[in-house]
Structures are given as structure tokens and as C-alpha cells.
Image (cartoon, rainbow, N blue to C red; front, side, top):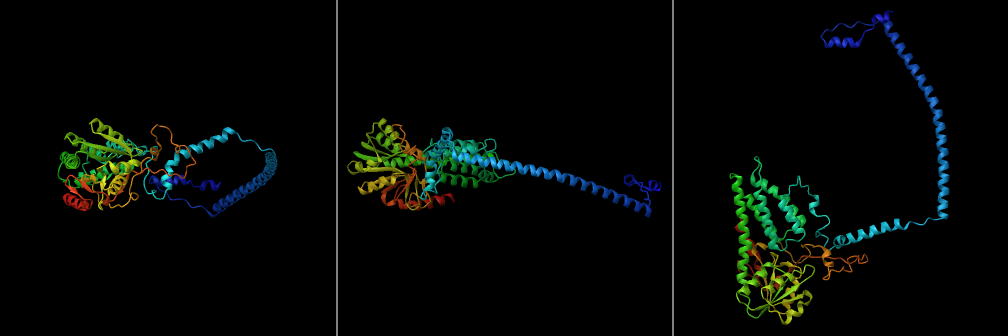
Length: 471
């Protein structure tokens, strides 16, 4: 047929074009084009007819299926309606086991979350952070890729568990952690030491602040070490930078903690006379050192140890003093008024910080003892190192403070459970375990530092002096 002779294979033409052997494509006649169009139209008409037949046959089956489904749904609806009527007539008894389980779970959640939510409900202390021992910051650390140095991880756990206490002890532990970090520090070749080291220390300090808030002594050391790192010359080697930073850390500890304690001890011992009855509060390493030194020098005096729950750290202080043959008496803070009136001659207190407006930040209860001593005209002597002076201004114990574990307040002397520990009815009782309080400068007679004996109003002078020394 002529149509078969004149047909052209497009695939062959494409292959020829790719191989560089292009041939001229022959043109089709009008009769051939009309015949191809007719064939396409007939094929399309046949396909449409088949589709219509298939749709007509499928529509009948679908209608039958819909009718069957509607019948099943009607039957199921009738059965469900009958079942509901029977349940209303004869209600089933709930299973005791199933009903008790959710109640037990709710009660356990309430008892676990009661102390955690008490502080957050109270609007006065809602801005203070409450550390939760069940979810410590270490739970979010990935030890394989964490930017926090292991020395800081260990220190954070010790601070959270209150293994290391006291402003001097915590600052000394921070200095040791920074020294370990500096000894193991490696700086990339493309980075400067002073820039990269500050960046590497930042997550370590952030982690420690999540474990427990920094004391003023720790804050001042962090400022010091950052300032010291920023002054490192970019031209020195890494070994020289290490030696310089380690020597600065040792000098900071020796001048501000060790030698300062010696100077304060010497000055305070001269104020202790024979026959004095000195009242101390809790346990302070600096105060114990002063009293033990006075005993070694042959002073005859008595000590009245006032203690407060829940820490009861005065017990350890009383044991240390009795071992040194110093006559001691141990009372709770609620008996301070009775012993202060006729027995005490001096009040010797320690401080965690001395603020710029002259307020003394100390363990909670310090302000109460200073107020009682002021009422009975007893001198209040505060021992504080100058590196604990802070530029912060504070007139109360609410704006800035630290919250300890409220469960510690439920502990009893005999170990028995407190009535508030497992009683869900006391949901209106908020347990707040504050760490610090602020003592006004009018209640403090004198502050003994390593520089001199100063009034509280001289705090800005010392802060200005330290600022000029850093510059």
C-alpha cells in the first residue's frame, strides 16, 4: 500500500541527527494525512463508547452497595440504641481496682508537685528560681559533645547538693575548676587565645548558675578572670598565657581569701577580752578561726552558738569549739532574745556580701539577731573580706535571694515525718526556704576587713578603689 511505503520512523531520524548523518525528511501527501486523522477519530470514538458502557455497569453495582451499607448502618444504630437503654435501666458497677489507680496516681502527683508549685504560686517569690533535685541540669548534658568542662560539671553537682557551702568555699572551688580548665585548654590556630577562651568559659559559667545561683564572691571572681583573659597579649604563646593566668588565679586566692582571713583574724582577736560572752550564728569558717586563735592566745571567754533550722550548721561549730576547750552554749534562734539580754556581751557575725548601700547580706536570721542586739545595745561586729563587696543595691530580702529545697523544712530532729509532708489538705501553706537576708547598716556597729575597721557606709569607697586597681 502507498501508506506503508511513505511512513517515516521518527526514532531513526533522531539517531541519524545525533550521528551527524541528517537526511531530508520526506513530506506526506494530503490523502495520507486525512487517513491518519480518520483513524485517530475512530479510535477515540471507540474508547469513549467503552467508557460509557463500563460506567453504566459500575453505577448499578455502586447503587446496590450503597443500599446494603445503609441497611447495615440502620441495623447497627438500632442495636446501639437498645444497648444504651439497657445500660440506663441496669447501670454497671465500676471496678474498684480501675477506680483506685487514677486516684493513687493523682495523689502521688500532688504530693510530688506540691512543694515544687508552692513557691511559683506565691507572687512575692515567684521571680526566684527554685532548684528541682529530681531534674538536675546534668540531665540535659550530652557528655560526648558538651561544651561544659568536666571540672565544672563536678562542681555544679557539688553546689546543687550543697556539698560545698560558704561563700569562701564556693569561690575557692570555682578557682580550682578554672585552673583545671586553663591547664587543659587548647586553642585553635586560627583563633586568638583571649577571645576563644572567654567563649569557651561562657557555657561553663552558665551551667554553674543553673545548678545554683552565684554568690557575690563567685561573681567577683568571674569578673576578675574575664578581665584578666581580655588583657592577654595576642603575641604570646599558649604556654605563656597558661602560666600567666594560673599565677593570677593563685594570687587572687592568696590575697583575697587566705591573707585576708589572716588580717581579719588578727584585728578581731584584739577586740575579744577576758570574760566576754560572744554570740555567733551558725557555722562560719572565718568566725571559727577567730575564736580558735583567741583561745590559743590565752583569752578566756564563752561562746553562745545560735542555730536555726533546717541546716543546723551550728552543731558542727559547737563541736569544733568544745574540742578546743572553749565553753559553749547551744540555743535555737527563738531563744536569742532571752540570752541576748543578760548574758551576751558581743555579737560576732560573718557576711556573704556587703552591698553598695551598706546593707549586709548574710544567712537568713542574721538581720533578726542584729535587731535584737541593737535593742539591748550590744555591739554587732561583722567580718567580711573586701572581695565580697558588691555594687548591687538592695534594701530587702525579696528582690534578690536564693531558694533552697523546701523539703528540708519538713525534716524533724527524730527523723519522723512532718505532718505537712503527706497531707494534701495543707495546700494553702507555702513552704519558702530562703537562704539570705539583708541587714540594714544602722544595726551594724562596725565591719572588720583586711584593710581596716570600717563603717558600712564606706563600702562605695572600697568599690571605687577596686575599680581603679582593675583599670
